[in-house]
Every structure is written in C-alpha cells, then in structure tokens.
Length: 92
Image (cartoon, rainbow, N blue to C red; front, side):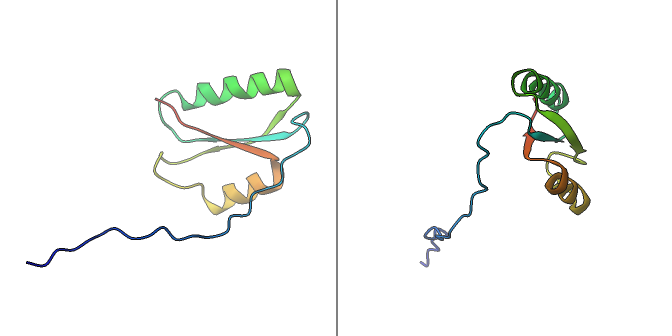
C-alpha cells in the first residue's frame, strides 16, 4: 500500500512591514467593505470614532464585489495614493 503525505515544511520568507506612523493623528483613512452583513455600519462607526479621537478623515471607500473577491487594481491604486491607513471590514 502506498500512502501519500500531503504535509510540507513551511516556506520561510522575509516580510517587509510598512513603517508605522509616529501618531495616528490626522491620518487619511481608506475603508474596504467586503459586502458581508453589517460590514458597512461597523466600518462607518469605526471611522467616526477615529475621526473624533485622532482627527482622521476617510479619503477612500472601496466596496468589493463579494467577500471572496480581491480589491481591483484601480481600487488598490487609489488606496495607495490617497490613504495612510486601510481598514478592511468584515461583517456578520
């Protein structure tokens, strides 16, 4: 009998993290809504609180076609150019 072992060792790779801002104050905020139930209200409430506490402003809103779809190239380009911080919302 031949058995197949589907496991493999993890592949190690270097990950370059984005630099952290010195302060959240005044950052431009991008919101990515994934179309799940309650994702939009959660993101909007979070954005409202960040605006009150840290004077952040929402500069980009992106709505994915579905939770399983990625943000399209135009959306990624807008987020990179117009947002300092991006929050992706998950609902349910």
